[in-house]
Length: 330
Image 1 (spheres, helix red, strand yellow):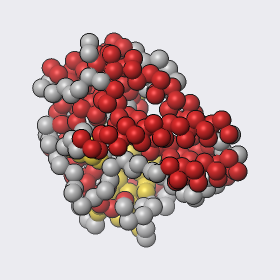
Image 2 (image 1 turned 120 degrees about the vertical axis):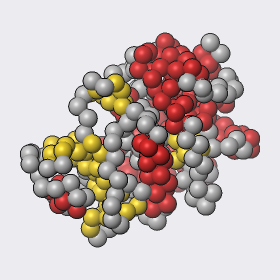
Image 3 (image 1 turned 60 degrees about the horizontal axis):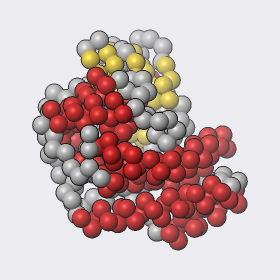
């Protein structure tokens, strides 16, 4: 589908200026379009399975509640017709959504302490929405058994996606993180619907202050686990590659507490959500690189490079967790 078709299907009106490609990812293009109704960011999606629909509807409820509550964020286009969450059906098997385009720039890495403090306070505002996850929806980050990793890593070695050392490193990381995840699940701490992609790339610095973007990955997490994930991301957007900036981490924690947030345990268990989320995204990257999610040879090669970087990042993150835990104590 062309950008003009998607914009028209969303009810944005005809184009009045050139289209800018913001993301050329094959299954998920993102465009900047200017129409009679203003300038918008438009995304196109072809759902990959039945799981997408309830998870996307839940994310949409969260985003709508955040906008209604006055959270600093990009204005979403609220669908008027057949839709799933914020996504309108625009064709056979195709959905699209739009949000108001914001002038400005993404936050730098690491995020400056004043913006990190805003991030902590903004998460506290999202936490106060207190939206409980759909009990019938399994949209949490999945934990995969060792036998699955053995199969995937054998295929990755055969295809040249990972070498033997990289495969061994990823297997070791998966075992360690799965053990942390099992312990956390045994605690059965209540979860809320949260943003789950609160990164420097999704903080837009505008003349009206920082704004939060991209609620599409919203789903369940513990409040403290999500906040700690955000705080570490503020200090180290290249997590596992760059050394975190402690001042930014602590500014995020301070902003959260000042805005009424309730800190949780200051130990290594606080980082379970970061690690399980990164392991889940690494599994996805591995599947794409091995050809299980479609795409061209170039697309698969791109994900091969991404998953190799993620293997290095996971190993570095596991090594750094004791240091990060000490920071939580102040």
